Amino acid sequence: MLFKDRMAAGQELAKKLASYANRPDVLVLALPRGGVPVAFEVAKALNAPLDVFLVRKYR
Image 1 (cartoon, rainbow, N blue to C red):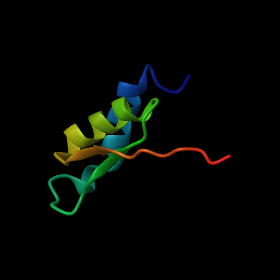
Image 2: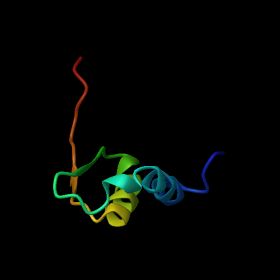
Image 3: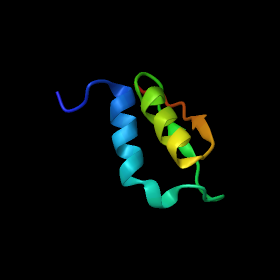
Image 4: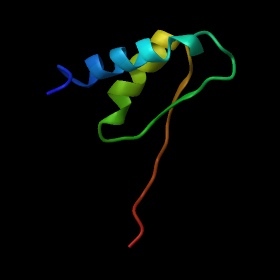
């Protein structure tokens, strides 16, 4: 396992994206079912707004 949990994964990702911190043109989008905890940590670290991006499968 690469990360302890999704929060740890988000924190690691946020470190890689640190150059985007505190920018007014940055928005973090999260996919439901696992992506929200990761995106929350990224948005918090970058001081960026967070929104959920809903998608659905087509049959």
